[in-house]
Image (tube, rainbow, N blue to C red):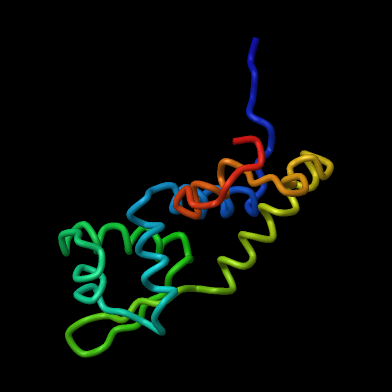
Length: 130
């Protein structure tokens, strides 16, 4: 039996690429550093992140290719900045997907915090059931 993949639209492919780019802790950390500044060069990010210059450059390349970060050449270096509109759009798509799939059941209940929210806050948020 020949099973073909269902048609995947270009929008879903773009969202998947962006999500894959976010699926690394170092890239999330770089995004946070970039979000705290107007723009940064690789040297600034190396100093803040504790990663090797080549590692930072590779992660930035992935984020730029996913259109989550933009860069502009500046003399002998490049300046990187968050593509806020792309991140907002991605957040909207994720929200719509959760609303569609969960029918509202994915929203945390009153006084409850999801495991994801606790982890994103460094585990500092108390959970009602704990």
